[in-house]
Amino acid sequence: MSGKPVLHYPNTRGRMESVRWLLAAAGVEFEEKFLEKKEDLQKLQSDGFLLFQQVPMVEIDGMKLVQTRAILNYIAGKYNLYGKDVKERALIDMYVEGMADLYELIMMNVVQPADKKEEHLANALDKATNRYFPVFEKILNHGHDFLVGNKLSRADVSLLETILVVEERKPDALAKFPLLQSFKARISNIPNIKKFLQPGSQRKPPLQEKDIPSLMAIFH
Amino acid sequence: MSEKPRLTYINGRGRMESIRWLLAAAGVEFEEIFLQTREQLLKLGQDGSLMFHQLPLVEIDGMKLVQCRAILSYIAGKYNLYGKDLKERALIDMYVEGISDLMQLILMFPFSPPEAKEKNIATISEKATERYFPVFEKVLKQHGQDFLVGNRFSWADVQLMEAILAVEEKVPSVLSGFPQLQAFKTKMSNMPTIKKFLQPGSPRKPPPDENYVATVMKIFKLD
Image (cartoon, rainbow over all chains, first blue to last red; front, top):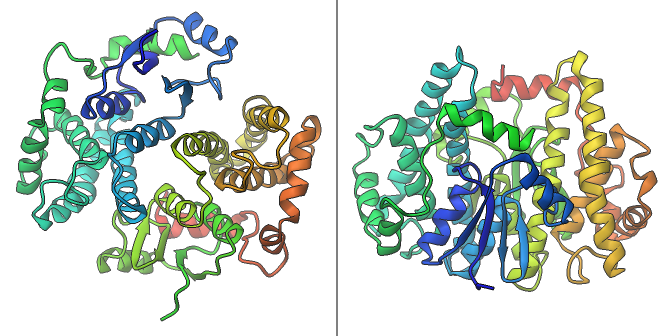
């Protein structure tokens, strides 16, 4: 049995992507078991592997962790990506939670009803450029390479991931944010992250509408 | 200047109630500011007090903390309610996150249209009795200890207690199939800090009513 973490989820970004990012940024190799049909989920459930009958689930260090935040908190803590004390943790948590709100908004766009999609996307992009990105642009005024404590943390990983997801929908999203542009370039060049951004990595592509039905079939 | 944490929200449970519970359970006195108009919220945003222009806001130890989970994690960490190591933390996080999914249904309930209310109560009841409560019933039965994690009072116990009481307000008999949870509820109710929080006159807020819904809609502009 390999010592590597094992990720259980469908072959899509969904709620597992931020876990893939964080493990990759920490330089941790991991395996994936993709749920392809309803029976795959049901088997995990009947085997008692899913505490609340849901995925994501990550097998790591003898535990079967569920709940995305619990998984991310554990990985961040284990691999020293969570700041040096409670106060840095609090900053990191605030930033990460804010970004999670934005990320969720963008990700939810693909499942909006057709007549609401455009307006929903416009709202999400408006929040990105007027509520969230200005906060991080301002923080980076401290002149350090990283958001918190002058050291790479999960907040940096999360910000890069979020920037890229927004840019997929609005390529010029960072036009007014020079510090975020250099942040993006800098963090993308960190070896582990650079590797994750290359083709052939375990990073997943954006969800296509045609893939939604088979995903829904797993969960409903 | 007082050293007590200061909570800014509306005068109702909402997303601040779990924070009130945790501070109270930790025996920490706090002050509260209740917003009554949207202008007050906008002003806080302009002042730079609200990182993402949202509440809750908790001023504590020189920080202006926003985002519930960031606030709760900080309090749990500071007051030793977050387990003794990473693995206990992971358990606590899993339990708290699961319960928070259940609490989300309760949070949204007052805003559902009247015709959906009965169905929503049924959903809350079903999720509580089939997905969430069985997990904690089993955890408590298996280790036979008073507390969920590490034989020690933690954030997970506080969150579970809050959830049990919140669900019971909607489904009074919800614990009928869960003897461990009934015993847990009794034990928690008798812990001095929690007992005090459960008494009239404490900072605990009453269940949401139409007034609360109207205030939320007005101040947060949810229409």
